[in-house]
Image (cartoon, rainbow, N blue to C red):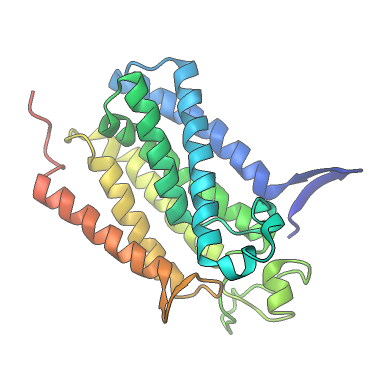
Length: 258
């Protein structure tokens, strides 16, 4: 594995960046299908603008979240703050930033947030799966040392390999990629075809992803910490419980009354 797919002189095409491009293109196609199916009043250009707003907001939120948890380093080396190609995007910050940007854009367009959130949820989790493959090729978001036969020795020039030279590690990015793909298939092939109240698919996505992340985080080696507690586990558990509580209390799985 190698983080660079193609290199010609000063030009580099990195897997990490490529996965973002692939995620945006696939999301544009899937979201447009759902927007048309649900009768949401957005044009093709509106959908692409929505995706751009969401991605930009997500990247900014993910980076600020990560930088905030590692301010001892970034405060002394501020030139590294924009260097996302070196790793350092936190998914919970990305979710917060992306949701905020999406809410602002949809408010300006006069589109109901929860209807659009349901249309977007399958594409979000699929995009996260692409992103985890980028992490795998980049050698970041890695796991702890393991004796399991599927443990992977990462190249010495990667973050995982430099921190654990010659040591097999849990490929946690692949664990999460598999979970994300499973959630996508459940949402896209089954759940979206059912009648429900607005917000159910998005809530199901949030709950299932958060529970999966809680499990995967147990094997991670590069976790952000809240004292002795892994921040992602604590946040994931709170989010999963909150999402399930809202789904149950609001009975979101029931068909919307007309």
